[in-house]
Image (cartoon, rainbow, N blue to C red; front, side):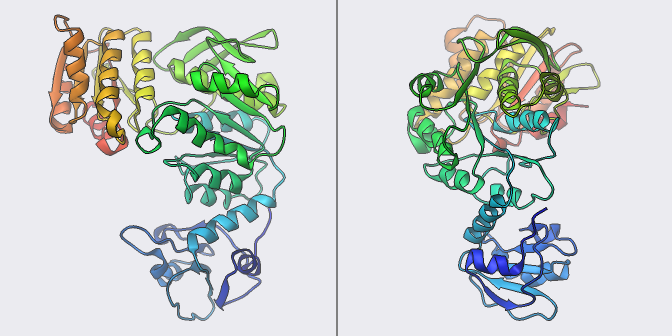
Length: 459
């Protein structure tokens, strides 16, 4: 464990000591006064509605020993330490970068359009077979969440961090803080296409992750993704690129994939050897995530039997293809954390790959698509038909384009279609339709609050 003192904070962040002890040690850092425990350090962050810098006294009342604040005049408090900085978010990032510099450990950075959190979870499980691992909690993958994660380093032996973005330059900031020893890019899809304009620009933004890496450090990419495949071919000679895939010839490959409601089993092919791999969740897209984690395990010299065990024992973050059996014997797939065209397509393909009496899709709006909104929702409609969905239930204005496309292409089909105005209406219809042996996928962007639908039909 590497300690950071108040004096270090002042030096790194060019801060000013308002009161307190220069030799006090920075302990657990929190930005929410409600989470503060005795001895913690509080950092004030200015949000849209509340300026956390003004809450330093509340943080002390809850047990904080140190407060880092900006933009206000703080009063001295006896027995407590207050550090004034110019910008508390910048100070948070500087502290995280300094903390990272104290650790000579593997740092795995994960980015991609979809599946980052699940890929991170499987990688962390594989790495934990050899190391004590710290990983990003939930999807704390932005300019605040990533440095908050790094500041939780104690006696850890490896770090797995997720890096998200909406615009150019954001991953550049994150990777220069984290200084990865290996990075993985899971795919390049359509998430954030509204702000970046094209998939090619999304690739460019994701590739900023390389800026924080040293020469010849490994980069694992999904070789079945068209843009990553092209990039790998161009860069294989001058960069340490490791490819994984199912269709295109890759360094690490999967074949003979079998999907079940609660798992997938496939044959891993690597260095001309074959191994049976079990992933504790169904769907081809999770096979890709597992292949990525296997690449990371191999690069970090973890024994194959330990890698296999790590994949099999992964505990996924909630609301990512979470399997729930309700009281009448229907299977619910809770994939409500977020949605993009690529992730909805993958989830529908999974639905079609498992045995069920009927396949039901409850789909909601995919948000932040801008001018691509109509086109991508219509493409989801095409996937609904392709994957032989028996009952389609939609909620949301944009999702009307799913229904429209289904009706255009499949007007005389037996598929039941319901367009709902609210989650409550969708719950009522779903509960009227669900039967024993059905499997139902519930998926939409997080802001649609589709977890409410899951709770309404799981009993």
